[in-house]
Length: 331
Image (cartoon, rainbow, N blue to C red; front, side, top):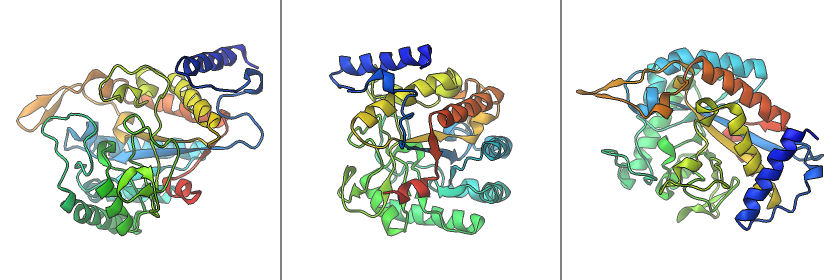
C-alpha cells in the first residue's frame, strides 16, 4: 500500500468516526479509496451545463465556442463519454457545437430554456425567482423541442439550472418522457446517496416514478459553516485548489457509500466557460458585475489541466464513465 494513500484513508476513517459513522473497513484491504476490491464498480457521470458564460451572468457564449472543442478533444483522448445539458437558447445559438458534441459520441441533454429557475430555491439569490409551477411543464417542453431541433434527437436526460429541482419539475419531466434527472444537490437534500426512482409527491424520497434521479455528490464528512450547506458542494475545487483536493472528497464519499453497502455513483457538474479564461468583471445590463473570486479563478488552461488529472485519478480508482442516460438504465 502507498503510505500517503494509507494516511489519507485513515484520516477519512477518523473523520467519520468522530461523527458516529462506523466505517468497519480494514485499512489493509483498501488498496485504493472507493475501489480496489475485486468486482467493485462505481460510476462517474460527467455533466456539462451548456449555458451563457459565468453562471448566466452574461449573454455571451465564449465558453461554449472556445471551451467545448477543448473538452471534446480531451474526452476523446481519454475515451470518456459525458452528458452535455443544453439550454434551448444555447443550442439554438450554437448549432454547430451541438452537432460536434453529438458526433463525438456524447449524450445531448436539456438544461431548461434560458437557464431560468424551474424548481425550489436552495439558497438566496437576489432578483432570481423560480417560475410558477404551472409554467414549468410548458417551458421544459419548449426547451426540449429547441434542443431536439438542433441535435436531431429528443433529449431524455435533464439537469435543472443551479440544481434547483423540485417535485413539480420531476413530474413534468416524467410526462415529457425523460428517463433521468441529474438535479438533486446532495449538499441540500441528504436523504438519497445514490440514484433512485423518486416519489411523485416528494422528489427527494423514493417512490414509484419511472424517471431516475441522480444525486450530485458532496462532501458529507466536512463540518459546514454555510447555513445553506453550499460549502459541501465540491464544485469548483478541482481548479480553485486541485484535482487532488477533489479526489480526496471522492475518496471520502465513496468510503461512506460503500460502508452502507451501496454502489457509489458520482455525478459531477462543470461548465464549458471554465475551460476558457473568464474576466473578473462583466457587463450586466446597465451595471457591471464582479463574480466572487472562486467563480472564475483559474478558468482556462489550469482548469483543463486539472480536469485531465481528475479523469486520470478517477480511472486509477476504477471508474466506469457513463452518460446520465446509461447510469439511469442500471436502475
